[in-house]
Amino acid sequence: MLLSIEVRNFAIIDSLQLDWRDGMSVITGETGAGKSIVIDALGLVLGERAEQSVVRAGTAQAEIAAVFSVAANSAAFSWLEENDLLDEQDIENPQDDCECILRRVIVAQGRTRGYINGRSVTQSQLKALARFLVDIHGQHAQQSLLRPKEQLSLLDRFANHDDLINNVRLSHQQLSEIKANKTRLEQQQQQRDSQRELLTYQVEELRVANPQLSVLETLEQEHKQAASTQDRLQLTSQALESLSVNESGGCLPQLSQVIAQVNQLSAIDPSLSHLVETLADAESLLQEANTDLNNYQQKADSDPDALSRLDQQLSVFHDLARKHHVNLAELPAKYAQLESELEQLQSDDEALLAVNSQYLEAIEIYNKQAKLLSASRVKTAKLLGQLITEKIQPLAMDGGQFEIHLHQRESMAAVGMEDAEFMVSANPGQPLQPLNKVASGGELSRISLAISTITSEQQLVPCIIFDEVDVGIGGATAEMVGDLLRKLASGRQVICVTHQPQVASRGHNHLVASKSKSTDSTTTQLSLLDDTQRVNELARMLGGKVISDKTISHAKELLKFD
Image (cartoon, rainbow, N blue to C red; front, side):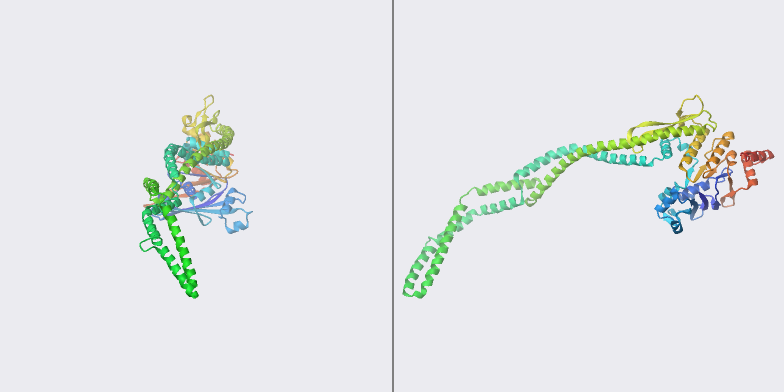
């Protein structure tokens, strides 16, 4: 429950420190006195969006701090524990209840800051903890109740089937991602078909040419050899002529003559016989060289069309290189690149087939999860409709009926397969019609209050705040509303800002908002009333500024409701 709140430099509050009690606390005051400002301040410390304009004029920052009592076995205690935001003594004694301090600082010329138990936290962390501490039903809840989105949200909150909603949301997210990929591949399919036709032609053309690096290197080497054939033949002929026959007789004939002469010499001088062997070896080597040159000459002269043929082959590769805007050495890499692109196109086609299968599977998963959510909503809609019907009938809507109709959506959505529509019949015999078409302001207030009390009873939040939700009602109906709120306070803390004396009289505690003015500022204060002050405040609410004995008597009668 809320133990205390301290507010500084917020709107028209200079400084306010207020302790809260168990049961039902009502806040009243003159119009414009600032009854709801403290509720607005509490909303900020609970993580609502803050604007710099709330900082009191002439000050640098506004500061709000709220102290809550947190039960040891509560969801709030578990959240604090999971987020490492418990004080050390609370960690050491987890079986005991603890106090939790929430603080918000709004800087006029800078960013807001939030704290839980003295540790800096984000706005989203404040909001996450707040849902376990306080349930605020604000002045504008009635109008939001007319929106279809809020009607579905309210039904889901009452059902408390967050897991089902999360499963539907995740399955829809997966379905959307697969659908987006499927659409992309389908849109690119025509482009791929055209690109595939071109790539297939280019790859086939290169495949036939076979522009492998080793092939190109061999071809260039052969072309170089073929281009030098005439020079090689001429040099070979000259070498053969020098070896065998020329004007001087040639190397081999001359060597034969030398060998004969040395043979004769060695016959005279045997010490020169080794020269005969040396010269014979030389002759053998020259004969071998002569044979090799002859063979080389025949081979070089055997293919006179080689150069032309090699020119044609190289011309094909040069043409392909120019066609693909690369040099000859880069042509093999270009061939590999085009092959890879063609394979990727084929892979995209296979991916489209796979994604079509995934899409059908994702639809099946979504439908399964959405049907589970739908079944829960149907069951909850029937129960909630019955509970609200029972709640509104004592509130001057005797014979009234309330139902929640679920309508199938035309397309799959992250929130499920249906929308909710609140239907009401305010009087017996009248047909059910949409809430936003038939409910008057007073009826809407009563229905809103009935829904608020029912949902609060279900959620078991320790502190519930009603900020002027009883607008548009009065008399006996207001008394019933007050009784309803007091009954709700039997199990938790209820804080109610009200204009209705019948509602205010039902509170266990009564606070009044007052506004004081000086020459340069206006200040709001909240004060706890004693019994006498409370009678006077109720009399003011009943009769206005002039308080008569009759209004005093009426005020005292209101307090005798038990």
